[in-house]
Length: 446
Image (tube, rainbow, N blue to C red):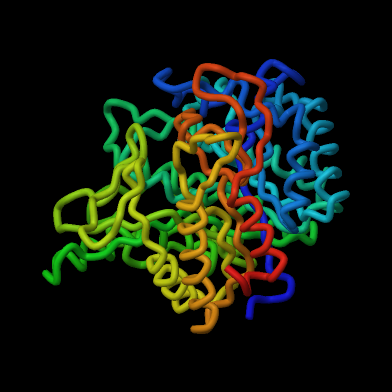
């Protein structure tokens, strides 16, 4: 039922996995500034900087034919005018080792790893100067790897900019004298300009771009019409990006809303023509959960972590996220109905504080989560959606986005915790063998 060339694999970030913090002239990155110290930090990761070949062997054994990773900006530049050859050489070998194992490399060009000095000097993506620096870097990266890499993601979860919470993942802090919504809209606009320019260059070099957004399905809390309007507004925070990826312009609702609220960002002459260059070849999403919308209330905030409203009809994970497989099917159908573009699921998974018992990790809860989501994905395909891939978030245990090791997503256990690095030994979980069989049968047997 699924395409013969369906992509099966996993996805990670550099900063949550690599470690090697002081190696290869790496610089501090803005993601480091999001760490509270409550759990851990990103300095050691799971040491994939030194162990990625071992990890790739495990992925090959599982049957992966694709792997999404980020190219860490803070490894690639020594200052704003100097590129770091050691960083390029690291990813030369990294990409070659994937290809040697028959695993397609899918780099993400921005996954919250901007060098801190660009945040401190320019306020990150709030500045068009940083847009220019990022675009120039991406051109260097594309030039280096375009003969090895076909598929690219430019920004990870770009619509997270519009979630209520700090913007340090994009290197920016709202000035005291600026409306926070106007500030968010400015970062949105600047990153969409960056996306469009990089997208144009990747296409010039023969590449294929997957425009990415995170989708948190939002249901009206009641049948009150105002709750439906609130739900539509919540969904528009993803559509404003996806519409640029699919159509090359802002959607009419969000643009009108910025004008009505008085929160329009600074838009330079020629910017709308640049956005026309932002149309991608496919869409890609991360999907983990859903929320509910009530008029006048926030359905999702992202201050210390993603916080959503509880749905009485759905179970919640131990970390407070709804478990909603049907929401994935709804999301796929909504997006395909709206855009009629190929869709890749490039993040989905279940975080849990896995415990080893007698040397084994029997993570049936993860298998259940993934099985139900894959079942709904397949149902969406039967209903006409052109879904072309499923990449598990964190196929091996990595630090969470808040540097917490106990929120494990992997099908491979890594023997470290928040404070004690231990030996970082890799141990297959029960889900490893389950997912291996799923891939072998191209999703026919779940």
